[in-house]
Image (cartoon, rainbow, N blue to C red):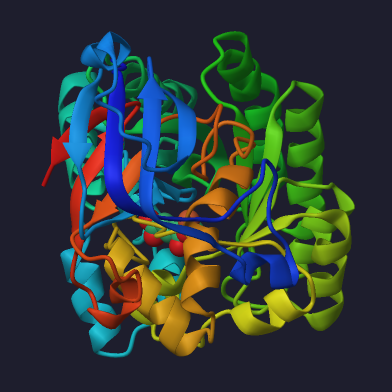
Length: 416
Ligand code: NIG
Ligand code: FE
């Protein structure tokens, strides 16, 4: 659904550009007070000073929105989530509170494997309904585009089921959030393949990837490149096969131990490398050189009680940093945009302006969409987050609290 809309008297706050902002550029926002933004059939057609829009009949075909006292930002782009799954893992969370580690729970058959069991037992309707509830919560926080991953099937049928759920949500005429799909068949080694990781990689390459690409069910391929899960060599083999079948590349890299996943992302010119808690200095430089978006997920570090990724250093090294939530039932059962802002600014030493760029234009770049979303510029989609204040500092300052007053998707206003 698209609309014609004129937003006036607003304070526009946006990064500018049609590609990722790197290094120092991340802190440069365009701010315009007493501004008007015009959206025509869902696309931005004017951004500039107020201009007395009641002048002629032309404007009768537009909705008018007086946004005095509010900030207009690009809709937030959550470029890394696992929002399609069945079951929860609250028990496991309680074990972690008592000191058990995320990986030791995974090694003894819990963790991702327990969500796989629940997801395999679920049907399309229930899986879709639950995922749709998450989309509503995302929209209420100003998100207009989200990336979602498979990876809770680890068999052909259930991997495709998760991707079909996302495809269906993205094709909904009344959707409030665009959904970008990533195939993460290499999220864990399923029980049937225990001790036979190479054979499982063969299985994904031969039996699952072709169905994903032939049915156009994903744009990206991701892998959990981690000690005890998929090695650098196994990840490389899978990603090269995915690329040869037309998918763009992402990696879960250096999340738990420093394995060199960020370096592999640079070697393969992946679109993004995500997590990066333990990325080395050399790999950070390599990512900056190759233009790999460094996607940081501070909610996961928070929930796992791990040290945060070195966001400040990555920006200073010239990287394009994106922020995302990593919403999933295990390592991080939170999709909170306000808390993401607060953690990034307080613990990763990002400026408020850099965090805004990271959750808008650089999130879009992490999804190969910086040409169509992520900033408020003529030609881009009319996707916005409207804040209930004219002071965008509230985003991290009002810790963990939503200050989004309305979300606008392709010119359609949804008040919160
Ligand atoms: O990004 N580390 C791998 N994948 C997710 C966690 C998935 C889960 O625990 O269910 C992550 O942290
Ligand atoms: Fe993840």
